[in-house]
Image (cartoon, rainbow, N blue to C red):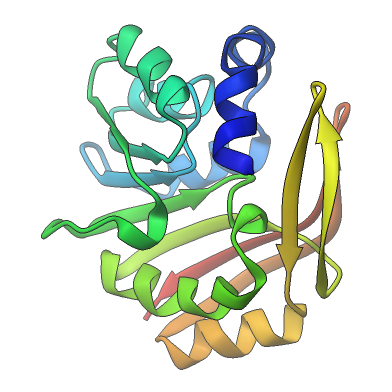
Length: 196
């Protein structure tokens, strides 16, 4: 459902997101990373504004998204220090590891039955001392909601389960903000963790 829906709204999404702001939390995340640090952007969409911002700060960004049209737009912008790949997160394979992993508005699109599978994979991809920043739903369950005229699937697990899964995979929660609001945006849960 989500791949098809995102492909349908790709042009509208690009227009909307390219004029959007970069969250202060993402700005703070970028500041934790050194020059030429490698960042994986999970669910990168069209690459703007987030991947573009990270690259402008001297970071090497790999963006993945399963919506082909989103990646086409991202690649067409030729943002320096970035590469954009069509890939579902669970199918993504690389020998690279990353100093930072960002999943801004993507984990909550993953199937409920796969939520627990996120954290061991992220831990394998993350270097020791690396940071993970992600948004998540704040209620256990799954539902669909319309956006830009198309239907999208969402799911979430309990925040206590997220903490347990992160810790079980060698990551420590640094910050967890419920009901995060910034300008005209709202996220149920924002989590920053670091691999020990």
